[in-house]
Image (tube, rainbow, N blue to C red; front, side):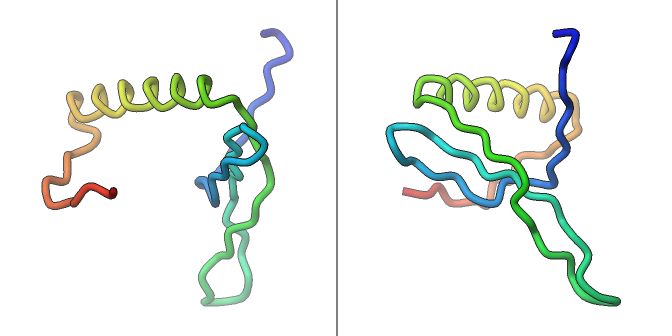
Length: 83
């Protein structure tokens, strides 16, 4: 990975499932005007097969669990599951 490229994103704008692939649109917050809230602008799309998406979600959950254990994040017991 000598030519590793680093990309910054403020978050994910949208996640799509199209053409049997999961598509993440990453956004950065761009300033608009003085005193106005920044606007999210899509700048990178990552596309992966469903199996890759599930693996990524599993890895993210493991990282969240470690961050909770380390005290970096706190569980919010008041959230209701979507479904």
